[in-house]
Length: 338
Image (cartoon, rainbow, N blue to C red; front, side, top):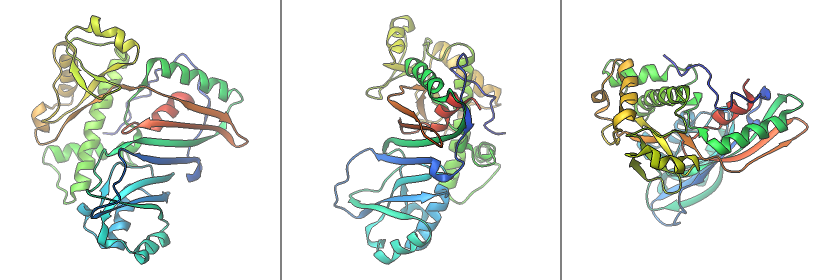
């Protein structure tokens, strides 16, 4: 079991530019944008850390080692790519931070860019999104014009909100382990790793749902019983009259959502529920398997805002912002089709 669902592009009618990403870590730069400003008071130190060619799990392990912390004392807003230069916020107990310990992190290749303080721990999802600067090497001669054409179509229709391959682990077998955990066939002491693996399987189910809707020409269309999300406020609601709500979807004001199964997930109804439950049944599962998971809804698409593209000597440069939980590799797949 892995995340290989077969390639599907929303912009199938447009040619890609080819090329390669992440030839070097500096070709893929990510900076986390916080959800809120920090009070500069309180018992938690918030560190903006820069790492290169290091996974988030490895980052946490080094922080725990050098600052003498338990796993649960390290707070993260999100997970970042390994083969990249990333800047992300991490919270730790304030009394554990000293200049010498930060110096030891620097010796491990982890630079402290900024230090702030706040009254509570950083938790998953406490970020507005991520800003990217990416260099695509070995692209064709028409790369800039072709990329612009793809971006314009995605801005008009929305970017498919697939989870990227990094969600599923380097070997792609994290969903398999996550399912085994859900079924009680596998045990793991680390709460952080357990959550990561189960989330990976839930992410795979979401991707299957999104692909199915794209194949059935239901990516931008609303179904009766859909749970729709408002892009401006994040609020969700049940679609009882899809014909009435469709104009708002056409303007990218709202989008249908897919299931992240769990006890707090708002259940779809009618045609939307039938589609989601059919996919779950095809995996040999029922909603009860996820009764101990939090659950949520995830938008099937995101409104793609400004994307800056220009040609450099080494290749094509893209700079853009994506909201939390969205993956740059999905946008790059649409542009490159490599």
